[in-house]
Image (tube, rainbow over all chains, first blue to last red; front, side):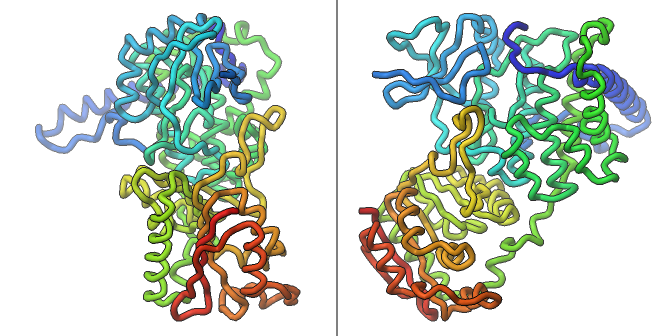
Length: 58
Length: 457
């Protein structure tokens, strides 16, 4: 860690701990919800794109 | 023989850039050895360079280098540009590239230790990371140290450009480490408080910075961790926030220019062919098209093996030009925002971190079409001043002279006194002849304009 020359700012770190936890819960909930929805869908129907390969980004 | 460290490359103890014998190198210091090895052994370097996301390099051995673990010879970026010269979509592309790289890095056990917009350059029509030493070994449980910098360099300016005013991009010239979040928070409209993403990453972020400014992190942290899943969720959240920001390029002065000019299409095509023929005589490796608008003439001089910078004052025109570059996957045209009356200055410590507009020249060929009358009349620049300074930008010049009788110049004179006594063709030629040799002069059909092909003396 000794060449992390950047000042990350304490507030940014603390906020991150908060947001990351919340976002992590959000994603966990969303992916569980997707799994539940899958059980009720016929196979072959369009699924919502999950984390796509970032190659097609800008 | 002399080695000269780059004046901008000093913050990161992992290594630095230097010039030697006219080539650019990056020294990797001993303290970065494990990181550098992991970058290669994990496959991250290979993956990112294959995707065109990281600048490729070769390892070299140079005589007389002290303390280096490795010396890298990176591939050359054809032209260096800065975030305050980028259009909205260009900054957005740079932001999304940074996040894509971070996501990829995490999957290879690494993480970006900084997220500066100056680590990104444009090459082959794509945003690319040029700082090979930006990667640290990912420690599970540790948060992203670059989160603040990402929000200041990318998210804040993009949000301000999209939601307040496109011209706020210029704040990046003043704040060289990105826009302070408290300032961004104050400038954003009230509606942004109802956007959960902007609320978190800008408004609450600004308040958290202030609240915890003098606080010991270890005490407040209470040993809490950020899991890898949460980390990826944060990156994903930032990605969605950026993707949601939109700006429609119109309503600025020059965005709809070509719909409103008084060119006949015959004259227009004649002009295009002439510009192309003259450029072919020069076969320039670097061209500056100044006042390029959406790049119609830039694409006439866009010869194989060359690189064209399409400068324009209007962010909407630059944005439209960039959209064309991306759609057509053009690789040697870079549109950039430039106010010629007040171009990018040298910035940073001792004015030596970011090069001025002029310092990044000269070009081989300069196009100054539909330009000089603006400089002479709207900007009150004497013609010989225009000529002498332009001569410093490039060896060859294709320039258009538009006389007072033309309706475009009439428009400029409409609301002011005509004090421009020497603004005529004779005055134009005598001004430019002081600094240039005029190779050819041709009148533009169905108009009173003239096209000139010149070379500096």
